[in-house]
Image 1 (tube, chains in turn blue, purple):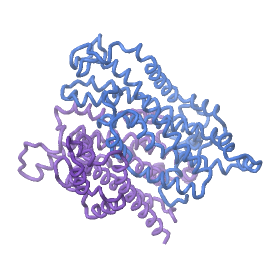
Image 2 (cartoon, helix red, strand yellow):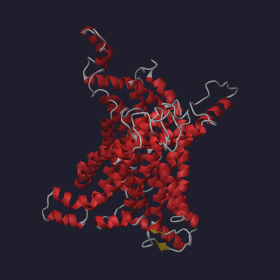
Image 3 (cartoon, chains in turn red, green):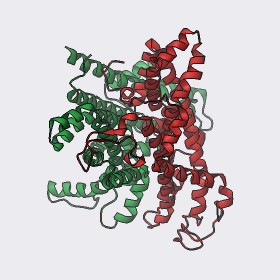
Image 4 (cartoon, one colour):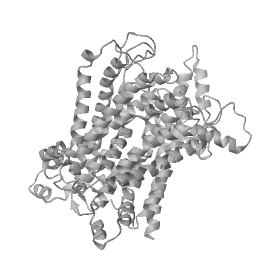
Amino acid sequence: MSNTSIDAGELVPEVEVSHGLWVTLRAVLRQPSAIVGLVIVGLFVISAVFAPLLTPYSTTDASCGVFDPPSTAHWFGCDDGGIDVLSLVIIGGRVSMLVGLFATVIAMVLGAGVGLLSGYFGGSTDTVLMRITDYFLVIPQIVLMIVIAAVWGPSLSHVVVVIGILMWTGTARVVRAQVKSLRERVYIKRVESLGASHTRIIVRHILPQVGPLLVANAVLAITVAIFTETALAFLGLSDPTAITWGTIMEHAFDRAATSAGAWWAVVPAGMAVALFIMGCYLIGRSIEDSLNPRLKVSYLSPRSWAMRTLVGRGPDAL
Amino acid sequence: MRKSGYLWKRSVFALVTIYVAITLNFVLFRVLPGSAVSRISKVPNASPALKHALEVQFGLDKSMWQQYVLYLQQLLHGNMGISYQNMQPVSDNLKSALLATLPMVTIGTVLALVIGIAVGVLSAVRRGTVTDHATTNVAVLFYAFPTQFLGMMMLIFAASFLPSAGMTDPFAIYTSWADEAGDVIRHMILPVLTLVLTLFAENTLIVRSAMLETLGEDYVLTARAKGVPRRKIVRSYALRNAMLPTITLVALSLGSIVTGAILIEVIFSWPGIGRALYQAVLARDYPMLQGGFLVITVVVVVFNFIADLLYFRFDPRITT
């Protein structure tokens, strides 16, 4: 595509991927922010897996008074039905994370598919697919989601599908840019002239190179999916009987937790979303940063005016 | 010639997008099972004659294509139907809603941009220092907060000293227009603050990484070798070039601005288009829903077009 339009694909940093998965992984793990992110996400995943064992109280029956403030028995207080908020948040994490995961899987499959086809085959395939992507990018997705979810009916699986099928555009552009530059590499040309099929080239030579980028993208996409789920839930478009971080906040708002001053009905769920998203964001950014060699050099160093490259100055420099 | 080519292409793209949205709007509400009549005529003892009368009244006896042409014609005349909720024309409802939304969202977005650029540049220039770590971490934290969570925190902790619902005080008697404007501004503080807090973080992170990229370019090295003052390097060399990806990414984040605006309007009962959409969802008011979708899409496309024009202004290399 020529530079005639604002093209997000062109702004994706040229990524150096030839050094393989393991080198990338090591570069990622050298960054403290990646470790912090992994620990946060790991803890959330553990709490989701063992949720039934971890919840101190039932999430369906009242165990204390209406909007009881936090106490030693109920660390995060109680909601409008006298249900322990801590238990709700632990159980709610399960569904929220699953919604995020499934929506992301849909988006990744679509995005990677479109990106691969578009970047690999180029020509008219590329033009058509990228035009479609352009329209999807411009149309405000949340509004489209609201319309579809409203007409289709509130249900958790609808929410997953709606988020998934509207979230793939970013991935498609990033993958396309990457595949396009890989396509020009000499070794791909050689493999091609040796008679390898398109499928083999894509599966054996292109996909592994796009892998790390796709992982970074997926981790960042989970944050968007979870955000969107909470937003749709807040607008009453999620399954009202399911317990998710989104519906917990929605119930608190609907049932006047704000005018009752019951911040404990809102804060735990909100903080859970924030922490989980922060964890994912830190991981995703670390992968992206370690794939981008241009970020390692700065000609305008902060303190000394001395010129220095930041290569080999340890993780702090990045 | 080249310049006009670019503008021409972008204008066509904007128009086609709007057309796609209009068509999507038509199709979406018709591909779903059950017509409006089959719902209305669910009343007991609805005779086939009544059903047919309703179908004729709603124009559902015509072919899909005729309906589509009719829909386009009506839309061209500004007719978006009648709201089920208050029996007013949808276009009138949306006009007043849009007028309430635009000032709030514009002020919030501009403030978030200014703060985001300032903080992003600061942290990129002082990369690796305490300032950088502090600002980046604060930005990541605010990026991670759901909008409705921040909004509800505002409601709980700031509603005692600032108005938190609506656009004006319904019981106020104004003595002058300045009085009224003051009231609106007071009502605007909390929604705008929430919007700024949720948007500035994303902008900061975008500007920071764009700045970091340009600071690693060879022309910055050349400028330093020439002895160009530091401030000038940052402003004219790095920032100017970092603005290009920033404009694009901010344009692409228009979607998150819309999301934020809808949630904020619901939380603070701001009588804008987001809240209208929310109420339309609750009341299953399809004409309002359609109209709202269309108007928001058109506004976003127009702002995207403006971003294109800005991009064009900032990047003299753009040619066809």
